Image (tube, rainbow, N blue to C red):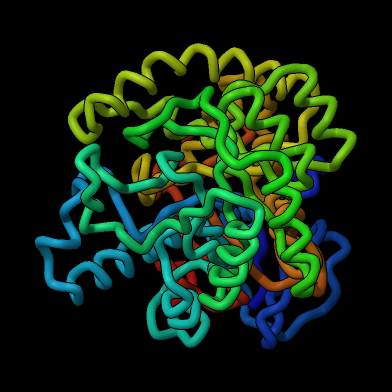
Length: 406
């Protein structure tokens, strides 16, 4: 098919193409992209977009599609397992409808969900999975209650490891479970009962052991839950691929990330969207205490040119509103174009798939969205799912609110 009459924002950071043409080939890849005046002859079906905007499908580098805070910690215990699975499938679909064609789940989904999407059993973004993170006893993600019992809903969503040998074994178990990457916790967190964001988690030796273990098994990325400053530094020095959250990031952290090529995924959606009604009291109190700290530090990291990829922490924050993150990045100093690049090209680079998706480039997968908004003028419009009128993944229509493709 050939889209004409389009404003094309290709994800590279280049200026938009006005009155552009984009061809989707029969193999689901992108053909010509450029001005109408230079478009080659084509016998493909023509779809006039009437000035709508075409962008790459977005990439959310930090989601938890197997959970939502509103359900509470005992939801899985109180619900039929089939219902729990289908609720996850609905969240996966809502993420796709929000304009996300690739997502990285950092804890809570088994490999079966990824395989179900790949086999078209359920509609959704292509998925990369961490399956379950690695944390210390009493660290972020330890689901034991103060009396010693495990929260029944999530007893298997964490790997508890407390020594170098134990983290190596935990890494192997996660790989056996079909993970595409490993998530680790080098600090405490907001939602965990036993610790705080400034508390340190895995040690430098343990982080390096995990990175080495992955090297021994062909190489996989490492995403570090790291909120307080010291844990951010430990993660970077240990060789992780990305720092998730990074709320305590300072100049030393930014300099070290630049030196090591580390990505920052600030997950501002959980900072800007604090909901007292759906949060445990300890979670709410920590979020409020860290809100202004986070805004200041992430704004400074943006100003310093940190390599930022989009992630929302959906699950802790709301599902199906993923592109609100772009507006939050702009509020902290990014230009709308830079925010779009963070959610497309840079995110694809972090996930190691930039040769296939992330920009509207000939030969790449035709992952794209169409909106009636001009996101360079109203970036927040992308965070409203009805404004995302069309979603294509690998050239296949996944959403068509405007009936443009019928």
